[in-house]
Amino acid sequence: MKALGINFMQHRVIDIITAVVGAQFGDEGKGKIVDFLSENYDYVVRFNGGTNAGHTVVVNNEKFKFHLLPAGSLRVDHVILGNGMVIDPRSLLEEIEAIRKINRDLRITVSKKAHVVTDLHRLLDKAEEEKRGSMRIGTTFQGIGPAYEDKYARTGIRIEDLLNRQLIKEKLNIIIELKHDLIPDIDSSKLNELASSLLNMGKEIKEYMGDTESVLEDAYEQKRSILFEGANGTLLDIDYGMYPYVTSSNTMAGFLSCGSGFSFRKVENVIGVIKAYMSKVGGGPFPTEINGPEADRIRELGHEYGTTTGRPRRIGWLDIPLLKYSILLNDIDHLAITNVDTLGEMNEIKVCHDHEMIPNNANGKNNNNPDSGYKSFESWGKLEDVDKREILKEGFDAFPEELKIYLRYIENMTGRDIAIVSFGNNREYTVRKYDDLKI
Ligand code: GDP
Ligand code: IMO
Ligand code: MG
Image: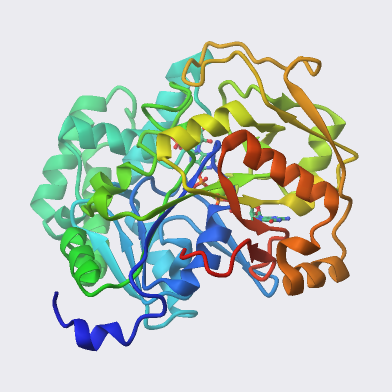
C-alpha cells in the first residue's frame, strides 16, 4: 500500500476498475461513453487493436476522433496504450500532437511490448485482401492483420525496437524475405528509408515508452480509478466473432489482462455499449441487416459512415440473441445504449429476438424473415431540444413512454440493466439511471 495517504486525497472517485467494451460489430459509441465516464477516472487504458478503431467524442459541437489514444484522453491524467495493441508510430505522434493542444499535461505511457505497424503492413493488408478474392474481409487497410501476423510469427517489431536501427533493419528484412511476393516493389533503398523514418519516430516516442504492467500496478496500489477502453466490437473478436469476418485481435473484456498486464481479477465492472440499432462495416453475416429506404434513413440520421474509412456502414435492427452472446462472453454487468435519438425518428422500430444463426458460424444464413422472430415497437419520435433539457433535469423518468418500453424490453430479454442512455452525439446528452451506481 504505497503512499496511500498522499494520493488518496487526489482521487476524483476512489478505487474503481471498469472495462467498457462494444457488444456488437464495433462503432457502438464506445468513445462517447468512455469520455462520459472518464470524468470519474484517473487512468484510461487501451488494450487491443490499432488505427482500425475510430472513437468519436463530441464536445460543444466540436468533434474529436481517436484512433490510438483512448477517448478518455480529453480529461484524465494518464492514458496507457497496452502491449495488446498494434501501433503505427506516425499516427501515434500525430494524435499526441493534437491532444497536447487540449490536455497539455496528459501523461501517456506506450507499452514497450506493443507491436509496430509499418508502411509494409499497410501494403500487405491491401495485397492480402486482393488475394482473398471472394473471401475478402473488408478490412480497414490499416495494416492490422499483417502486424498481428508478425507478432504471432515472432518476427514483429516492438515499440522498444524503434530505438535500435540494426534491429529494425533486420526485422524489416525478415518481413520482406517472407512476404516479398506480396509486395514485390519494395527494394533495399525503400527499406533503408523506412528504417530511418522508424528510428526517427522511435526517438520521439522514447519518452512515452514504459512497462504498462508496473504503471498499472502502481496505480492500483495507490487506489486510483482505472477505465479500460475496448476497441472494435465483441462480434469482431478473432476467436468468438464471426470468423473469418473479424479483426486480428481479441476484443472481449477478458483480453484486457493479456493486452495491458493488469489482472482480470481486479476488474469490478464490465459495461457493454450497444447502439439502439446495429451497424457493421466490412463483409460477413449480419443476421438483422436491412436494406433500402429504412436503412438509408437510419444511415443518414445517425451519420453512419466509418470514422476510420468513411465507408457507409451496413445497418440492421437490434439483435437480442447476439447481444446475449456478447453478454456471456464479456460477463457484462450493465449496458450503455447510444443513438436512441436516431432510432426514435423511425416510423416503425423492430428488434430481433430469435434467429437460428449460430453466432460464430460465418456460414450461417441470415434470417431476415420479418414474420419470424421480430417484435415491433412504437416510435418515440424526434427528441427536440426541450425534450433533451427535460431528460437532463429529470433523468430516465422524462423519457417518452415508447422509449421506456423499448429499454425495458431489452432489459427483460437480456437480464441486464441499462445504466446509461445516450440521446445525442454531444457529450452532455448522456444520463445515468442511478446516481449512486459506482461506475
Ligand atoms: P465507437 O467506435 O464505438 O467509439 O463509435 P464511433 O465513434 O465509431 O461511432 C459512433 C457514432 O455515433 C459517432 O459518430 C458518435 O458521435 C455518434 N454517437 C454516439 N452516441 C450517439 C447518440 O446517442 N446519438 C447520436 N445521434 N449519435 C451518437
Ligand atoms: P471501433 O473501435 C467497426 C472491422 C472492419 C473489417 C474487420 C477487419 O471504431 O468500433 P481490420 O482492419 O481490423 O483487419 O478489419 O473488422 N473493424 C471495425 N468495424 N469498428 C471498428 O472499430 C472496427 N475495427 C475493425 O471493418 O470488417
Ligand atoms: Mg468506431
